[in-house]
Amino acid sequence: MVEDLELMRLVERVEHPPTPIEGEVFLLPLPASDRHRSRHHCQTSTGVPVILCLPRGTVLQDGDWLTGERGEWAQVVAEPEPVLTVTAAHPQALLRAAYHLGNRHVALEVTATYLRLSPDPVLQGMLLQLGVTVVEEICPFRPEAGAYHHSH
Image 1 (cartoon, rainbow, N blue to C red):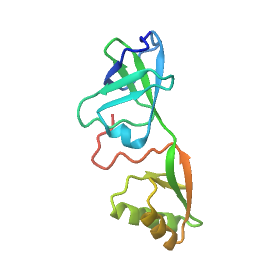
Image 2 (image 1 turned 90 degrees about the vertical axis):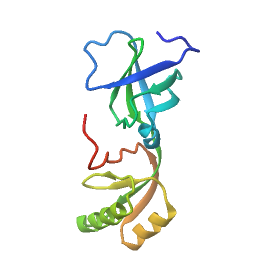
Image 3 (image 1 turned 180 degrees about the horizontal axis):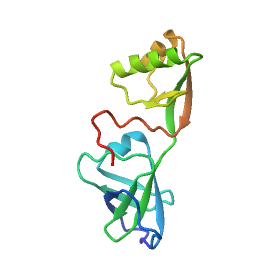
């Protein structure tokens, strides 16, 4: 068990935790912007203070497993955050929106039925001019890792 005032140092991303996991498993809610930080102070869902000490360039995804210096286990959870969710009546309109957002190198969650991005009034205006529906929401944001990001 982690002491209340002692930082949990998470130092490695692993494919899968061993089963069964010995000890407590922590959930680590992080917004998309913090999942790109390899050195970061944050806290678990139960308020345990954490410092990420991961190799530089580590990009975390929703569902990733991390292990700590003392054998702790934490699973990354996409924290709900403000987003714009884009839908369209026709698939071609959604594809057109994805094309224009990609031209602007916007972090983007892509699914068959919607696109999701961080709020931006200029991009929101552009999307509305393209004839798609844009809804402001607070929900988990899982942007694509990028074409050159190696899967793990």
